[in-house]
Image 1 (cartoon, rainbow, N blue to C red):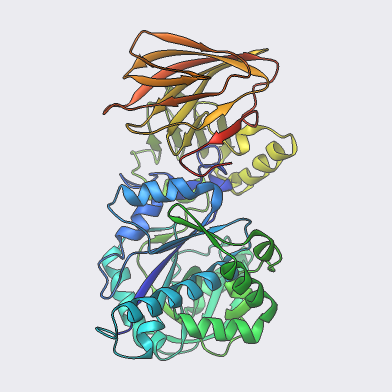
Image 2 (image 1 turned 30 degrees about the vertical axis):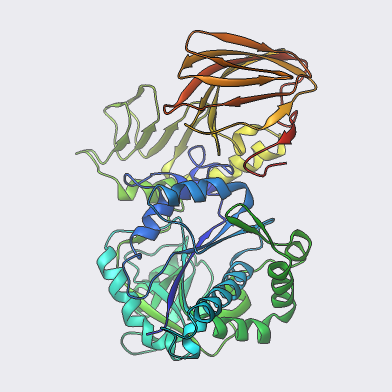
Length: 486
């Protein structure tokens, strides 16, 4: 069997699950249905398939440390972690992944001097392309489906997995399959239908939800892209050829990738090729595309309510209530979605949850940080939590991982007071370097070159009080940074 490379697509922003999912920390990094994040769960369900090595990940460059850290928590280092400077949809993302997978496989055969490499197929791997923000309840059935699809993909078919519908869903695109059993030819793709059309598709029995998961040989996909979208493929080749290494990441060339047309694999290839195939599967799949979809996966009480966190429901029915920290009390409501986070509260009717993305659009138009950031913001060295802010001041709770270090930096517009709460800190302030323990503090004057380090073995926690005429995160001039940030 050919080498099987799992490609994890991790570029989504998950706006329909706002306020829990935000641009800087979208849904694939959240543990929405269990102990692991959706990204971690995606890898765990396929890691034991025959022939699978380390995953190849395509991610937004802003999320690079989140991806690396979450895989590291599983003891996994990616085969390659390709960073997109801008989003260009799935067709270009899969193209650069295919080229990288072939290059890595060829190097592996060359380095092994032929040992274990039995032919051209060893340098032309099969790609199992998976969005990193989906849920699959029956993981064993999904793995069996992948194995069942392998012969068709090895023979040159571009195989997608169609979900057997259990409802007349209007939020998904559909695939019409040719008659037969198992892997079969795709007759056509259809857009998201109205309710009457979806009911007809459900009754027909040969229409399946388009899952966005694929199994295909790397070279075959590139051949199809060359025939269907040669300009896209050329720009992808340039972006990968001009890529540069940054720590464990590979940054695609910004100019070349930005010049690449943005398109999905469906539009660019699958709807045009005569080699498209589909395997219908019933595996408890969900793309978690709305709060209603998440509610459907949770446990429900006798009144149809799905509650998470500290929720008290009185005379309440068919409602999703999610609380991250404080008590949420519901009285006499039904068919609602209530999501409470540290800095935002969503209240919506369950029939309107698809419109949550309109809230995100408004927030972006108003340039409000709630569209991008949570109150607690994760960084490669730890995190900070914006506790309080007002005219001329801001208070943050900062945590720094053992052995981690913030950049050597300065600010033009703010001074900072640091009060150590837990652990010990190594502080650099201009020419002075000194250590602080719990209950000790220091002052960083405006314009001073400074750094904060945790040289200890436990988490460092401190309170930072900022004062000045401008307190934005872009008021940082970095001189040195172990994470390669500018």
